[in-house]
Image 1 (cartoon, rainbow, N blue to C red):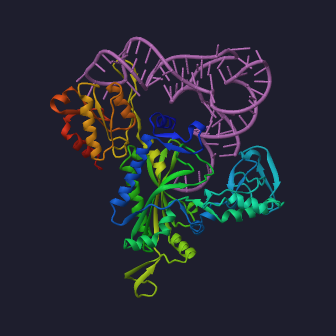
Image 2: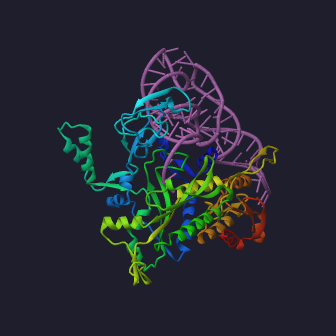
Length: 499
RNA sequence: GCGGGUGUAGCUCAGUGGUAGAGCGUCAGCUUCCCAAGCUGAAUGUCGAGGGUUCAAUCCCCUUCACCCGCUCCA
């Protein structure tokens, strides 16, 4: 992990946010190379999910939505669970998920929450639960921890409203909180904690505008925000992250089939870009870990340096979301199929609320995963000087690589730079991100491009000027072949084609 | 949030209670026609931030910020 963090910084993939100010917890910036990589990851997702599918369309919704969206989705309630710290074992847990115990009864627990040690006794408090980890009733106060970022929309400063409301009044903490809550609620809006809701909220608009027939899907990529309890593992879990989600709407009863389709399809997508296919797996959720809206769920997991972790969740969300939004908004979010027979009435024509299968991937995580998957070291070998060097190379899939080709004049004279610049312009005209590079000796340029994953290096040498050929060097094997300059573009384009 | 660790040049790291070092990299010049080449020269640090102890702190103490490794939830 340290390797990839270090490489990320050295080569301009990922920097810590606001680093000169000491950095900001869990916030990261994608540098020149990282920006390209992440764009490519997301571009490939969009291509496979939207462009190559007749049944899926795209959406790019506002990050700030009507606050009632989150009321309907359950995020406002579900995301403000009371959290409690255990004073004995220091565990932090959700009060509503803690084991219940009769207030007043005396319980035994081990000091520090260890397996063996001093036995302590204490009565269960009025709240009627104990620590799920060590069983101790010695707990901190419940604290509300809202996972959504809240801000205020509009020019009115809610703090001023609060100040006026509270001026000169002496109230207990609970009362003050009520006033603050009420005053802030008037202008309160939230940064979306997932992109999914917009696709439910715009279901009817999209279905009608494009005259879509079930089954169909709506896909969206973009930023989401969550005040995570703990942030960890570099960009793996951060408060600001990027998602790639798709909601696939199907006829009730067809969700199982769709889930099967998407779990296979999505795993295959990752594998088609990855080097080490043994590090991927599908894991089915246990009944007790399913979200309240889901009736089944699979995770695509990757074996990160710290163990197996999630890349994408493929959930069968039932008709929960559309129904909830329909209830809260009063707008029917249903689909009418003229051909089908209504199973209840037996008449032709069936109006129903579609079921949803949702492959929801983390774009930020996927970017990190591809970096981890790509990092490789060749076996050490001596260089021209006899010093043993280990080649570090990012074996990124060519379609994900920030630069597709580097165009290098072997030396900076005799017209080589001019010819190389001409060639690189040709790539730009084709929309292929190539890089002209004339700094340093050729070996060092190869090495730098290996480290950022550039799959092909095209070198203009003396022969190029005479016979119009160029050498093309392949990143992983470092082998070279000589091709015609006129054909260089076509050769690279051909190799970039998705297999 | 708790425990353990880390923070010194662009990067990787060494170091000492008395005005800071290496390797690599960077820049300039010369040389160089294929895998981090050579020679010459040059630049670079509020030693993470704030406070304290001290004649003197990068080093000792306190606070704080950030990251890494464990413990738990999500994409």
